Image (cartoon, rainbow, N blue to C red; front, side, top):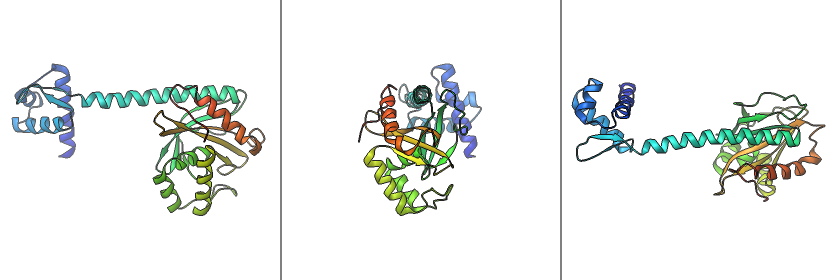
Length: 248
């Protein structure tokens, strides 16, 4: 019954989109339901601003709540485009695999990737859900979210290499360091012989929306280069037009 109600609500939106405006009776006729059913559907949609009554009792038009939903989709599309463009710019400049990732619970999910000239990607990262405690992007994102950091410390921390942080005490100290210095590194903590550096991608209001990461073999991205590369990532993030990555 619940699924049927959802289907009917969507049909109401289709009817109003096609007709511009329609009364309760017209909606009931179009859906082949009783007028009282159409009235309940319209009332529920109106509560969420997805439809609006032109006058007392109707007729109804599509509401501005749909504009809000559509703008969220558009914003996400813009996010993906900017993330890919930034990844490509970083890969070209630093000759390393570049990724942009977002937080999903206690994991980092990669949404964009580009490979530096002459490099083979260690793996295809887009869509990959990577462990927050073992990756540079995950550490940056956990450090920016107190709730996510708490969940990570309370859960099991599996080891992926001999260097993976596996205790809540170690992770707590690492996230505190990341917050202070404004960047994170993974020194063969998720994959052997692979290192990575990440910086937060901040919106103008200061919220961390994502993380920008570069990954490479240890001989190309050794620990002594981590701080320098973090500075380069911060500078490149500022060219995105959407994000900054200010010095701590």
